[in-house]
Amino acid sequence: MNSEEILKKIEQALNKAKVEFNEKINEKNLDEIYKNYLGKNSLLNNILRGISDYEPEIRKNVGLSVNAAKSQIEEIYKNLKEQLKADNNPAGSSLRIDMSLPGVKIEPFHTHPITAVLNDTVDFFSSMGFEVVEGPEIETTHYNFDALNIPDNHPARDIWDTFYLKNGFIPRTHTSSVQVRTMETRKPPLRVIAPGRCYRYESVDATHLFMFNQVEGLFIDKNARLSDLKGILEATVKHLLGAKKTRFRPAFYPFVEPGLDLDIECVFCHGKGCSVCKSSGWIEVIPCGMVHPKVFEYAGINPAEYKGFAFGMGFDRLVMLKYNVNDLRLLYSGNMDVLNQF
Ligand code: PHE
Image (cartoon, rainbow, N blue to C red):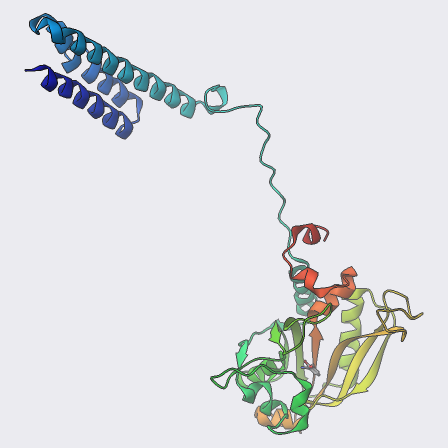
């Protein structure tokens, strides 16, 4: 062998050792690899032993590179050995764990305020025998309008600022569409709530976004009455907002008759009048009413046999009132400095 060939062999042995060490990292294998490359009969030691056979001028080179390779292998072996020890006994290892490093602070989980109030609302209505139902956010104008007694070309449709999609569908403007879907697929008596996102073409400000949450409610039974609606909704605002004083005002929604708005005494000024209640002392919280006979007819329910009431809470507003948040956008900002305050 000439000097180049020997040096190449040494380098190959070193590289092979590295690869093997890398691949087999359990103790037994480490020792085996060590023996193969640095043991008595290893290639490297054999080269050293026969070094006197080489020409004097290449002896020095061969000797140097064998020793360099040996100490590299030795080093890798020692490090891996120590690492193995640390892996098996992490607590006692000084090599792997720096005890002086500050720990990672784990923030405790908490629900988003809107989700928290929604969960509470669902629990509250469940306790009164209501079930949760859902409907699609992308709706047909039939379910969002026509079947709710809001015919095409009728001025009542202007109440809802609607986005129209190119394919003829619309992002629902209210969860009332779920009323119709539920009446079509289930038989009365019914007690359901339908929470979900709705969309309206609004310019965004402190109390309006183009997307918001509503919780629809529908109660149908043979002898459902306005006083049932009153009792249930008064209990609801008492539970959710601690409201003590409430009032019902007449209002118009094409799918209810009579239609009403439930107001609560302003939670900020207690009826004295402030900027939130626009000096009226009252805040409107839940639009509602008795289901219109036409809506029953559309859904295939006999209005002579069944009565019902419906309501649609603007849910984000309720959360704002509950926690005294003055800008709706804060609730959707994802800003942890804000959210951590709840
Ligand atoms: N869907 C109506 C709205 O979004 C609210 C409503 C629901 C009114 C149910 C009466 C009964 O404006």
